[in-house]
Length: 121
Image 1: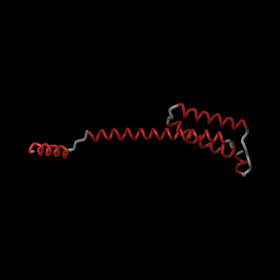
Image 2 (image 1 turned 120 degrees about the vertical axis):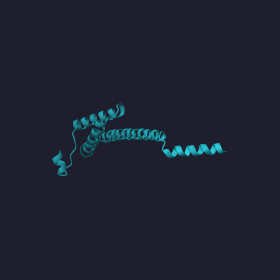
Image 3 (image 1 turned 180 degrees about the horizontal axis):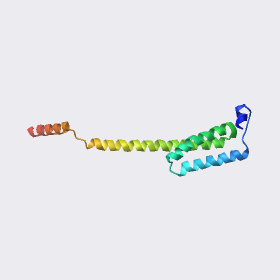
Image 4 (image 1 turned 120 degrees about the horizontal axis):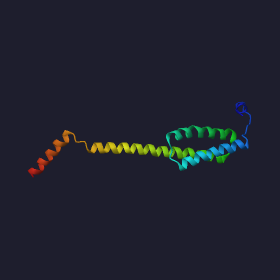
């Protein structure tokens, strides 16, 4: 099939091949929806789903497979974006807490100065 595609001949996958790809797309979508997405699954799905998408575009030509692949890709990327956001917010929270507890000497002088002003009034 690859040689025929390279020669710009019209090629279409067999029904059995399309069914196998559909099953794999179903599996990826099921994992993306029902399981926590680990970095290894994210990396695998990023490249394997792209490979399946291109295969379907050239050989499978089935809109249902394309839709499943696209949905799985979007779910994986959305969850990874959320996890990245959570990590960033955790970092910012820690940094904010550290800043709250930080009292440079100038703050102590200012506090003492303000207390002195209050006593004068």
